[in-house]
Image (cartoon, rainbow over all chains, first blue to last red; front, side, top):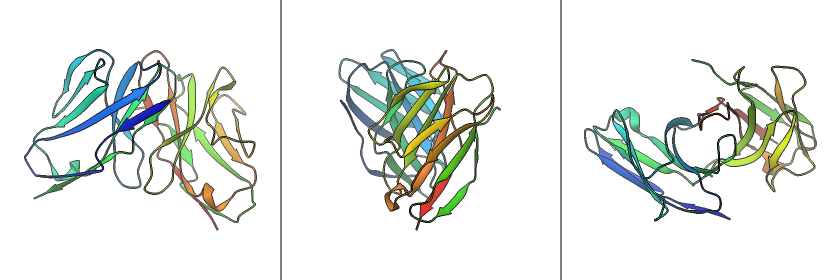
Length: 110
Length: 113
């Protein structure tokens, strides 16, 4: 089965840093994805981790620990436009389906 | 940048009617998917399609649903007899299968009344 947990909502201030945690228990896990979704829009790809460790991409970084079933997405230098839902998802292999968590709604305040 | 295109963006239909949602995946992608998202809920997998056949489907994808790739570019989802609970945003996605990159279309908002 698949079980992915992430907080429902977080609030942070413009310019600050926010860390969104995700824990998962999945069978046949191969990769951990993070997507951003603005209200009423499609998910857009942010990052994926296959190996343990930190992947950095500009203001966004993602970390994975396969042994702990744990990932986080770090958003630095928050901007108002970063207000969105952030979706954690697992995948078994390239070409396979993604299984999504419920998403974390991040509200950035001035 | 290549896009996945979905039409229509919005569709309102009466309960019991058939609807067809259309998608044009990225041209060199080999894997195609449909997901749905009921308002306020998580994105749920419906079906994946590869090499002209269904490769995996979820419990949601029952006999009311079907998918088709009628030509070399379109990928369609048909709901045979819509129910109120089919109201959701339906996302098409495609991937090359070589890496983990997935591209989602902008979605079709289906409202069943």
